[in-house]
Image 1 (spheres, rainbow, N blue to C red):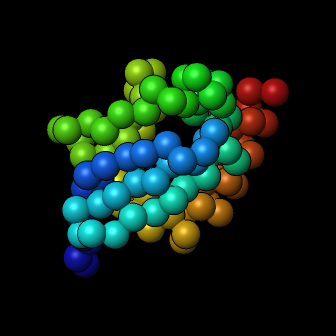
Image 2: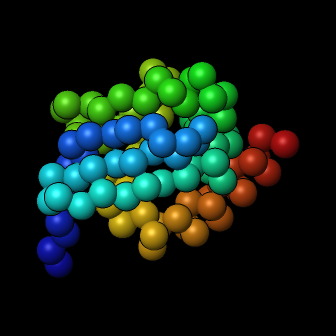
Length: 98
C-alpha cells in the first residue's frame, strides 16, 4: 500500500485557534483546532497566547508547540476527513481528565 508523504511548508494563524497550513504539493488547509484542544498534550494550546507559539519544525516538516504537541502532516493535509476522528478522540481525552 502506498502512502503519500506530506510536508508542511508554512503555517499562518488566521483566527484564535485557526491555522492556515500550506504543503509542499501546493495545497493548503485552513484548520480550526478549537474542538480538540483538551487533554495533557493539546490542552495547553487552549490558551490563545500559547496557541500563538506554533512553529514549523524544519526536521519533521509539521507544526509544533513548545510542549511537544504536534500533528502528523498527513492528518493536517487530509483534515476534512480526519477532523471528526480527532473530535471524537478529544472527547475521550477530556473525559479522562475530568
